[in-house]
Length: 532
Image (cartoon, rainbow, N blue to C red; front, top):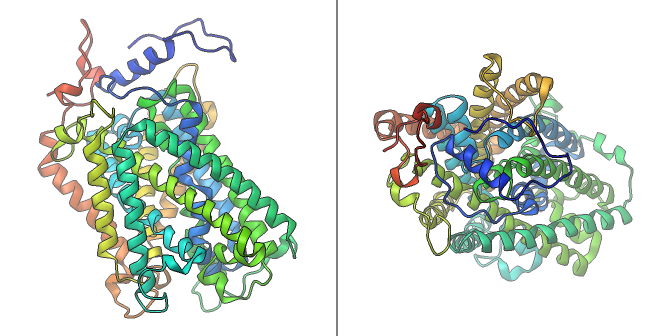
């Protein structure tokens, strides 16, 4: 690895030609990989990848009904609470993105900071979570399309017990088919659609904020009202609030996608940390204003529509049929690019694990199409598995909250498998930020500690066996209530058992993906595992 230079360019000066790509390729070689993915994504593309995964409109519109129904208007306070906690993780990830801008960021970071076993578990949890999250995001079509036109309620009229859930699977399946095809045709097409979608989403978000502000009918003190949702709860309103916080926890994650596209980005060690933080801050500010002004502008906060149809109900009620439906079409665009970003991140993760021979049929999964310059097989497999998640839950009325919550838990778990080894490395003096790149300096340790504590707390809160989340409608069974614990536990323990007994004996960078050995280079320094 090349030693850091003493002479650095001026702060605002552009990097010298070819300097940044060479440095980023050298960083890639630390993992034992050779550059294969084409660097075509600029600064805005990486920002768009992060913010489209978070997706302000997708998250706020998909689970507002849940947050409001379980916590009343005061659930809004979960938004800044989740932001502060996620900011601790994002800051830690920004340091890592500056040091290691590599595909499958969470997997490779955990492997580098911990060991190959921790890295595999983090990658496995994140991969399964991404597949489940793609299903959860795609289900947002059902919460919006039938509000635009009843023609989109293809299964029944929406009044039957299974009409909504079954129709949701049908619409979600169509979206997943679209994201599969786009991702299979290459990163350029994905980036164009994603960038255009994010541009529309940001404009629509600002317009929606202005329109809500024009129609306010009450003051901001509305966020102090609980609507007595704490009655009958074991911990009073705190219990209701912690349940409702799922709605906010669902939105502000996925910012690591900006780093996961590092091997296809220009100067990612500089751009990715900024993209991660910008995406999170923009989502917090714009999403928080949407939620606040929606509560302030709703004609009534006592209608059943708020706890069933959510923000879609407020948009149509406040803005009227024409303008309201125009805004809902923008929400559909946001959902589409969000699903596209989730699918893209899952593909890069599968590619990263496969070139380490850490998944079955790894050599096929890690193959980059010479025509489309992207791994095509992972795009298809991720899409098929996401459809499988939907089909398993096709007749479950609580499909929306169950699938969403399980996906979030596993993502928080994967994040914890990065921040915990990072904290151990800091305490052991083994963590060094990239010279001349983003660094937390003396704030690194307290931020890292808070990131770990936040991750543990949120996993406990999200996995808590609540009927309101996991078994909201009859029949009530203990295994449904404990479904998150059982599913996540089975994925983690079963997956790691497979790895320990079978896969770890095959682990090693595949020869066709390995960096070329330079004379005098220490192989142990450059590759975490042996090279096949």
